[in-house]
Length: 526
Image 1: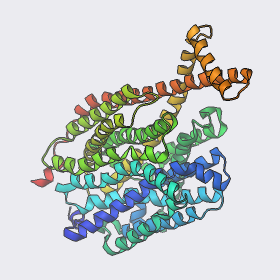
Image 2: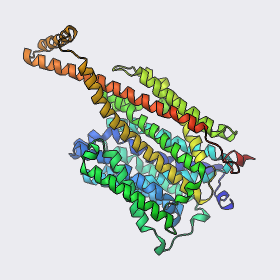
Image 3: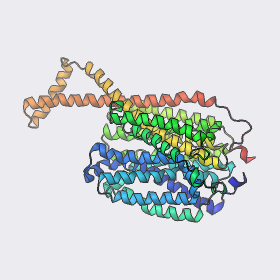
C-alpha cells in the first residue's frame, strides 16, 4: 500500500491534478458527440456520401475502444506522465489536422488517430484521479471523475450546434487546441509516475501478437456495431467477415494473454469479484447512457422538427442534475451506505425516466414536458456511476487499479456501442411492424379516410396544383403521417423496453453480497 499511498496529493496540487484529469476527460467525451450535429455540413463541404461521412464517427469510436484496454500496459512501458502527455499532444495535433482536412479520407484517418489519443485520455484520467485521493475518499474521486463521463455526452450536441450555427464545422476541432496545450503543460508539471509503473518490459517481452489480436477483435467488433444497421447486418459481406474475424481474434487473444509472461491486458485481475460485477454494471450503464443520449435528439429533431441546438440544450437539465448529484453520492458512500442500494435506486430512477418518456411521446410533445423527467434521468445517472465505479475499483491496489479502469472504460464504451446499434436495429424493425399494422387498419373506403384525403387535395388545388397531382400528393401526405406515427410508436417501444431492462436488473443487484475481509472505500476511513 505504500507505493499506492505515495501518489496521494493534498491541497492545491490535488486540485490542479483533478482539474487536469477532468479537462482531458471532457475533451475526449465531448469530441465523441460534438461532431454528430455537424455531419451534414461536413458532407456538403467535403463532397462525401452519407455512408462516407458516417465514418467520421465510426473511426473515432474504433480508435477509442482499441486503445483503452492497452492503456495500463502502455503507461508501464513509457511512464504514465509521458504517455498521458503524449496522448494529449496526439489528440490536440489531430484536432488541428481534422479541422484542416480537405477530403473525407483525410478527415477519417485523422479521426481514427484522434480516437487513439482520446481513448488513452479517458482511461488514464480515471486512474490518475483514483490514485490522487486516499482510499477513504475514493468514492468522492469517482464522483468528480464521473462529472466528465456523464456530463460530457450531453454537452457535445449543444456545443456542436452552437459552433456550427455561429461559425463553421472546423471550429468544433479547433476549440480543443488551447485546452489541449494547457492540459499538456499541467500534466508535465504536476502528474507523477507511480513507482510500480517504472518497470518496463524488454524488447523481447513485448506482446506484439496480443496487440494485433486485440486490435483486430475490438476494431472489427466496433465496426460491426457502428455499421451493422446501415449495411443490413449479415446480408453485407464486410459485416459477416468482421464478425468472424472478431470472434476468432477474441478467442486467440484470451488464450495468448493467459499464457504470455508480460500480457498487454492482465485478464487475471478479473478474478476480483467486485471488478467482475462492476464491469457488467458498467456495460449496462453505458448502454443506458449512450442509448438515451442517442434516442432523445433523434426524436426531437426527426419527429418534432427541432434544430440541433434546441435538441442539445434540452439535455442541459439532465447534465446539471448529474453534476449536482455526483459529489453528494460520493459523500453518501463515504458515510457507509451500501453501493447496492444506491445502484438499485439509480436503476429505478432511470426506469421512471424511461416509463414517463414512453407515456408522454406524441407528434407535438412540448419542451416543458421533458424538463422533470430529464432531471430524474440526471439524478439516476449520478446514483449509478459513482457506486458502480467505486465498487469496481474498491478492492484493487497498485497497478491493478489501472488494469481495472481499462476494463471498466472498455465495457462502458462497448455498452454504448451495443446500445446505439441495438436501438437502431430495434427501431428499424418496429417501424416496419407498426407501419404494416397501421396500414392494415387504414381502409381506403372508410368515409373518414376519404374525407381527409379530399380535404388535403382541395388545399393543394387551392395552391395551384392540378387535381390529379393534388390527389397523389394527398395520399402521399397521408402515408407520411402513417410513417410519422409508426416512428413515434417505435420511440415509445425503445423507452419502454430500455426501462424494463433497468428495472429487471434491480433484484440481481440487491442479491450481490459484499466481499467480507476486503477493504472497501468506507473501510478505509476507520
